Image (cartoon, rainbow, N blue to C red):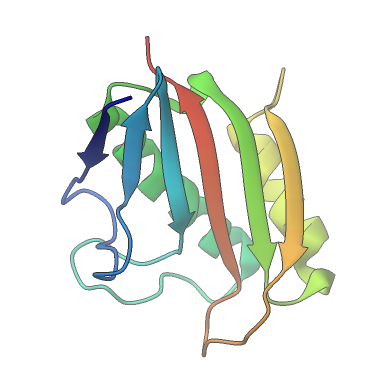
Length: 127
């Protein structure tokens, strides 16, 4: 199996320990993506809705660079810093996936990072 590393300047830069995404077996695996501004690297927004929106905008840019798109997402995994933010995250999420949403799972962050409320990872088809 071959795998191709995906990188775009239109999304937040990953740390040296992981790639933005990897293409393999007709799928693109997008790493946990935080709500960082691609130009400045700073966290965008103070509300869960704003941060969810930025995560999904970053993911959309990564998927485009991989030859995929949001409508090709099969699975979403979100990680919240505070479970009380679930309703607000879900409110914004439904704006992006109003019908036939992807499969989804979630968890609570095992550690707290200042200002970070959410991280989202996805798996999407490449067609």
